[in-house]
Length: 598
Image (cartoon, rainbow, N blue to C red; front, side, top):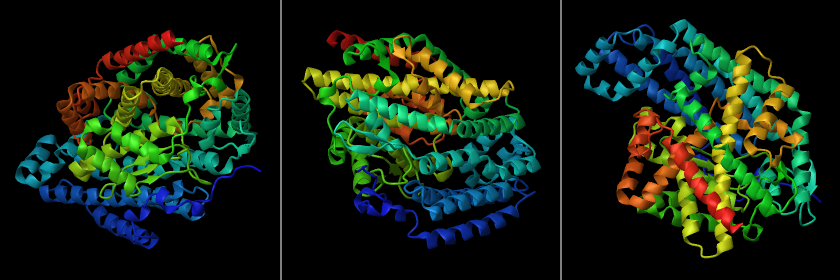
């Protein structure tokens, strides 16, 4: 009989996050929704008067910040409930309701930014000098003005805001369809047990030392996606069309430019990453050759990419053990940092295990005025322990920014979001390497380190190049059919993994299982974040306290500076290709050691 996942109601409370820290119950959430409507109506009365006086400007900005925080928290509450049980229609309806309300609020208040933009800078400066309380909002006003060339009239901003709820349909439909409606076949695992494939179990099954299990899982998993590829292609095409619509309205040259500019980042950073990674594909090809040799196979297939190359140390790591190891590894960041991480472990910030209907993957979600929430699907692997460290890095970034900054500056830009998480991973890796004397265990860890480069730098950059190419094709008028998307993806897979990898035909449809493609040119930031994190982690380990203090200033910075400038505080300059190339130099050393061991 197949091993089925537990229902949400069957999961022990200690392994679930404490959602009542946001609102005690849904009645309180409902009351907040009414509060949002009331306050939005009151603030809407400011239309046409936002900058008529310093007092009006201050009142508008204060009310808008308070309202935005309420919308954020209500959305957070509904989303966390929905994500742990996507089959719960009540929670789905809650997400839809707050999404709709957020759209209505955004539409009602769409006049604020245009009125500020229409006001001369000298007038705004005069207001700030006359009313010192406005000084707090200087950075916010400057950010509004930065986007002036891409801002629309008040009426057009309202129309665009009204369309936001509709624009979320491709992403929401994709999530519900892949997490709730799609069912995968069963496979026989290496123990002879019948196991149903799920998103959470897929990588674990691909880690199996039994190649037949890997192959069977791989083929059944992607054949399932292949059955729905036309529907999924239509959803992705709809997402790209939405980006094109918005970019065109806002007078950007491309969807890429529009997406990265939202984080105050130049497309040059994106292009530089893709270019530098392409120049270093020889290292991925060396990795593939080494994997083929260590696995002792005549042909290396895509279903071999997750299999441990040093199988003797592919041990199970229970959640309690993972927590203690992570705490020890993060010790270089100081007692105060470790104390908060421990608090998160003990105070139910984390939803630990997979259950029926739970969203796949892992994430951390900051909640201003409460604490971060971390979603895992923990399955007792080394990868899962690294995921725990990773997500707690996100959580600590949110925690320190939220503790240090007022709400309007606490939300750091997505561009720097992967730095803290990956820094934690690097510190964990260095800790594990330092504390082993076993050559095979060291080889196992170095293999894992290489896999991080493969997964975080090469794979995410391949995704980034896929997004760039498919968006370019759509902008050129080409239809993004399932066959077109699959060809682009398969060609990139062949280029990245090289001639010694068999790019199985099933891998062509892998684009259909990547939820990040609905996050608009997000994935490249995993790669830039990783290279930044390598530099920061080594600085911390080599220089100690001064590097730790600089790093914590970065973590506490929120969005008080542009992301590139914030990273400079931590000693990383991404305006040059140097950090990316330096990361590849680290990989080169790992490859040299592994090739010698092999």
